Amino acid sequence: MLTTTSRQDELYEETAARHAPALERLARSYELDPDKRKDLLQDIHLALWRSFAGFEAQCSLRTWVYRVAHNVATSHVTRHRRLASRPTVSLDEIAAMPSGADHEAAAGRQNAIDQIYILIHRLNPPERQVILLYLEGLDAASIGEITGISAGNVAIRIHRIKKILTERFRQGGNNGR
Amino acid sequence: MDDDMVSSDFRDEWQNQNREAFRMSADEIRQRIERVNMEVYGRHRVIHLTGAILGWLIIPLWIGLLIGNHDPLVRIGYALLLGIYAIGLYRGVSYRRAAKAAARASEMGNLVSVDFFKGQLERLRDLHSGKRYWPTQLLFMAGFSLVGHESRILVIAVIVLVSVISPLVFRSTRKYQQQLDEVNRLQEENQ
Image 1: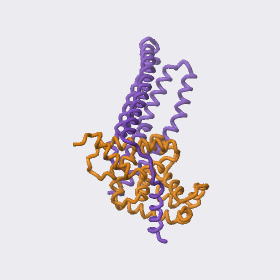
Image 2: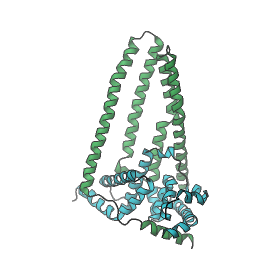
Image 3: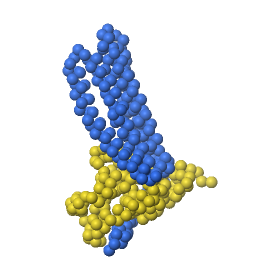
Image 4: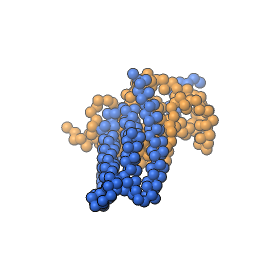
């Protein structure tokens, strides 16, 4: 039988092999400053390793990993008091903003991916999680299991995300390639 | 191109950003955790030591002044300040306990992210909550005013300090509450 720490090592290895690039993208979506991002990423990896001591496979490993990672990142945002100093917006509000605002904000940045990061940084944490998980290729049911938002509600948000991506970034997306 | 095709292209582009990514070995993780624990332990020691020094200096002083002073107003003032100190200490300890519980890694895996976010917002809102803030501030002002009722400068200084801090505290509370309302709406939509 595996000891707790070797089980943690094993689960961590599996997580790093499968999800390390996604975790890096997640950290970048929550923290723009490169030094703080490095700390956040390290915190996520440590929290994951620690969390595996309590993992009893009641959900899939992927769901567990994303929950821990997003919760650590949310905690990072609240710890730095960003939620009170810098207001976040919803997908509806983003959709209502003139598209020039995003392009202006992205001045000097080369491709659509950079613009998406700017957009994600403006979103409130629940909607930020939906868009990130969608971009990582998860379906509405899986996103719902991680975030606690019903699959129907996730589907509505995904529909909005698709519209925003099409309207705002088609040009940027083509340039970015 | 329709929405599905564009967003599908974006998803591919998004996922192909970084093939190589940061990861740690099990040994690195253990070393890092040990270092973090040491840092946390060190930080706690400094906080506890500062609290103890302040407590050991201020509390006996206030108790001494409470007992030794013959002016009843000043005595009531010191009693109020001692009460506020105790409330502050209790709130500080409660907040740290809640923060510690929220940060427990295994809990994070069991909590869906909306619930986790809601918990964080509630904790921050309660820390700055007007319901708790005003009685504490009024008692604090009353305490200092009574203690220094013969020195107008002290009383004015305390009132100015509270007047400057209060709007900032309420601004934060309002913003946390607005975000909590959004999360609550989202949860209601789920039902």
